[in-house]
Image (cartoon, one colour):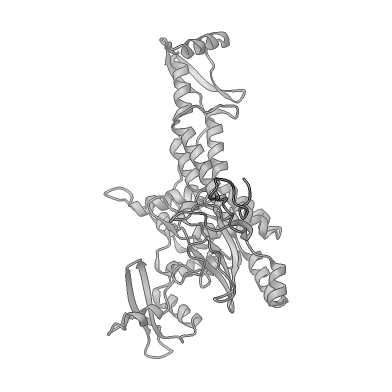
Length: 441
């Protein structure tokens, strides 16, 4: 039975409802699934807008064939669309949490990581996949604000959130308590089955707990530490991953009736099928698009797509040309033409276009625009054109970030491409000419 909210849908659930509707579109899931099934893990990453910054041949030369085979096996199990589905996000719009380096798998000092760009380069909502070889193994990517793996945001202990072969574990992990998750954490960190750990809720909000049990035959429980250790000791304690702390939004959305199983990622829907989340009736499927109807000079006229262009179909083409000329000269236009102009500038579906662009789905946004205005439409000045141009500029900004040519806080590019030397600026000599030590302009 769906929940009923007296004061409207909570802001958090409203955000996740939009994220689930727009952040990982069905076309991405379908393409990724087909390519992953064919063994094309790199193609699946490309379909999920994940840039691959690793070379398996280099891994083999540097670390040996055994470790390279382990990395390759994990890449073949990677469902990049499922990873994007479960990546950490930030309010209020649900974009990817910027500037993260998230560990997916560990091979001794080597880690498979996924990175999100800083906020200034978040256009397109792309991510990158690479290997981190541990501290002291080489210079980190200096254009990324946090190139080292995060302790709070990590998925190596939650492989079911990106590994297609283990996605069925989601149901059990969605109802597991902190004690079970803390036990996995402490064992992975080599601290034994019991001990202290921290839970971070926000940047300056945390709790220090300990995992205890009378003996191995009893289920462990969590309790606050009786005496809080020194700050430096607390900072060194294992951190419970964010994926274990936060509630699973998909389960909350299902139980609130804000989403149906058919709107979930297929692997998520299959995993949650046994948790008793009652499927709710989905929204009605829209029928074939009816033409717009406009009251024009005492009659009801139709506006519909003809030959890829939104047209006033109840007016003669010669009449439309005369009316368009009259409008160009400053005269009043037909109500039909004014309605077409309004749709071009700020259509009713503009919020849906904005959401798709916000989450990097430029293809989906253009499909909505073409469905409204036709493939042959020429955009006119207005909010719609502004949104599309702004999204294009943000994608260019991400490309500059990837190339190390974007401006960082404080001024200047994040790095010089190809380790290029700094240019020598010509200087005027005392006599007013160019000095010999400087190149001529």
